[in-house]
Length: 389
Image (tube, rainbow, N blue to C red):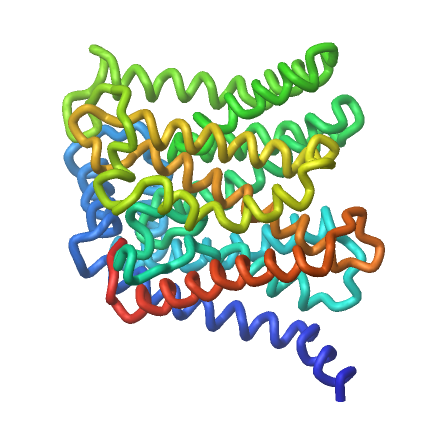
């Protein structure tokens, strides 16, 4: 019976059915939001303005994809947007599955990688209704469903992060196409939304200053990876935050703040931060003595730290409560959750490198389960139309 259960769980048919169910549910979620005053309907309006009114946007990849889908299929923007974002949610799971298998090979059952990838794309902050009835606003989250530009950015950011780790970890010993493809993903991600790259470049810079000061190969690889994105980022900055900015909704100034967005929605800033960081912190406590030997996890924590600083202390002067710098923190949280999950799986692997006490495994499992259950509750409520954010 046990063998039969695992054979069913490992079957390709089950995987396809799971993907189909997730796709249809997310299609429902996105389509409902396109019918309300949400980020989806707002970006559909932006797409129409870009191609009909010469409207200029500093990060137009989503809008070009939606318009391209309209030209190919003839479907209205609403349907193209819904199909695009629902499809990208499946792409995220497939990429995460490959990343998890790459860093933690050897599990005998393929279903471990499938359900781990689904979990990575479901985690949110621990939901405590009596503290804050808003599951996302204030706590923030490693996974969000309300912003279509983030949906386009996410798979590109995962590939860019993964490829950068491979390239920087073995400068001169990787296949030539990996750095070039990685650089392309980072560039495309910047064109979709610059939130990831503005956190990732400082995080890698700190890593290189500490661990790669004498490695010319690592610095050369980093320059190759980031130069196209830096060039685009400079152009986006000029067109948004300087006197060369195009007048409109995106023209603004960067100011120093103190939790401008978080403080607007969170009853208590630090407790809300703890609710979203609980799982990474429990993993960090467990592997603190060997963190420096785990490059992927170390870089992901550096990334999350940079994202936290930017989201907490930077804001836009005219739209501080919009939390546009919080999106960098959000995508950074996803990376740290993904690699904390990979580390957690190592604890249960027969050949795992990290030995963790049974008690701490239990504590971490309970905390992780709280994040996962909260994620499914939040996802369910979004599908039922109970939230926009």
